[in-house]
Length: 114
Length: 116
Image 1: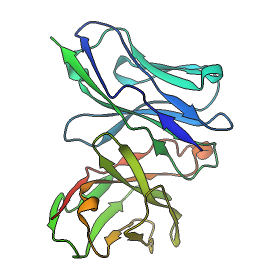
Image 2 (image 1 turned 180 degrees about the horizontal axis):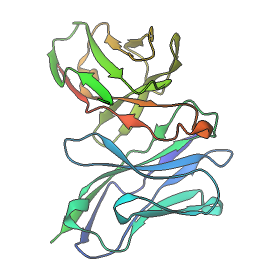
Image 3 (image 1 turned 45 degrees about the vertical axis):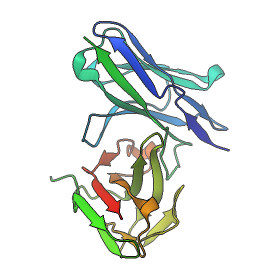
Image 4 (image 1 turned 90 degrees about the horizontal axis):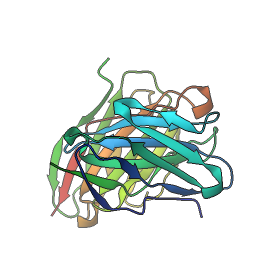
């Protein structure tokens, strides 16, 4: 079955520390991959996306993500987090360019330690 | 552009009542979707539409109906509300298929629904 897994429910990091949020997918071919962020009480905002080409993609707010086909992963990273990065992060997948649906993972809540 | 708008923002229903969550977009997007968000479960796709007159089921369609009579509007109907439908509901739209540049999905602000 097709699926998107975010294995970490909640992560806490210190301000200024590096961050990596994990995302694994299960699809037959290379899917379209996304990371979204949701601040408390807000809707979702697109951070970055990967369709093809360079497997390291840059997004907004200093985030980047790396697509690794061999590991079926699309992990989100940031070299130095800020208190304003506290939010919930969602990985999302669309199974191919003709896909009508975008499926979301269960999310990872990020807390920042002062 | 107003983007994606949803009404109401908050709603409380009693079990068995019916209601319609409204969603509208002014970006002339073909694709529209409804998601529900529950703690620990992320966003789950309820129904989606790839154009006026075309709808399909997502991951959790039971208990919900949709229609798409115009490009702009995509209402979600709860025919007989149940406590299990207590959730936050998000509507989203995007321009076209992913390969055609419709890769950015725009979300509405959400509707918080409580069913007693």
